[in-house]
Length: 457
Image 1 (spheres, one colour):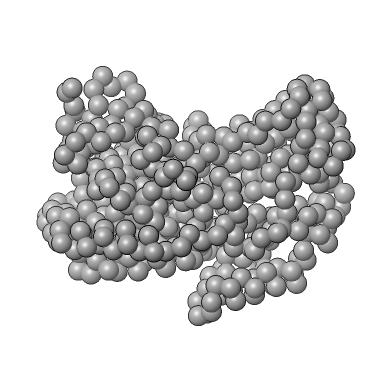
Image 2: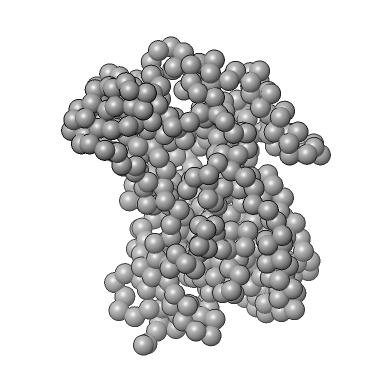
């Protein structure tokens, strides 16, 4: 088999927020790479104009700007609203790519169809439309895990329209519909809010209770309040109790709004950032129902025996955490847990990494940047300090085996869940362990200047 030989280069798959973060680190560290993006533009799920985009016309950030922008290019308060729209977010990603000279490294319209080991530590990457696989020295999986919709099935037949939130783009799709939304993550909250102003009836089906976290606490973005609280050296259980107590005091439990209370702690599941759902229920503009039991033509029957006539069911039920172009056994263990150490470094394949392969209760962008730093440090250490690199990999494996898995709600959605603050501290500590390697480039004199170096010249 012949290859397009790029074994001296690395391949970053995806030019969304995670792929761009890794690319920035590679440029700064002089690591040669190609970034393969299946669409004709950057932005990943934040680009509404591409098939990869999962945002809709009314999408806004659910994390505030102060806790979302990359450390190297903050979103400035005077230039951005606290929770920007998807269009502003995509504009920010474009600014980031231009600022760090990333566009010249991205090859657009290059869908990756298969990734597999090719021997001697190299990786074969098949790209749609290319007759031969490419050969790279390493690969970084940064294409995300929001591509394969999870749509539950129920007995019976529904005569109306069934839609996954993946296909939702505009409130116009909901106009004058009798609507049932299933699920209660952030997408469900947005769709319910849109429907309240467009649909003739809005129902929300919940399997369990959820924590509803307002976007502001005492006038401050909730993420900012939590960031300050995380600076106080308190045990995680105490922080959990304090946050739940403040939330109970400011907003009250869901049962106060005639919704089920969650049977788990607030940091054991991905929170739903919304001010709307409790208000809509209290106003009678949203009716909460239990899980679907069966379809009966134009009616939907629920587990409490009640039934409702609806025109459309929207499943805001998330995505299967799959990477379709690589053997699942390489990524996941038999019990379904990710095999990559701390969601970044593969324990067996030294050239295989991932970025953005996590679900966090905070901005994934900064975490992906720290992951990119870790990957770059390992690559550079492999050349300039191989003993340090080997020792670091061994330390990661030992620590991962010793570290108990944090308890999250048992669901596919939480297979990749991490606590944002704990994980950020972990990534920063791991990167500091590389010492002087952090200042080195893969090849002295190669690679683009850093932003600070460019400013100095």
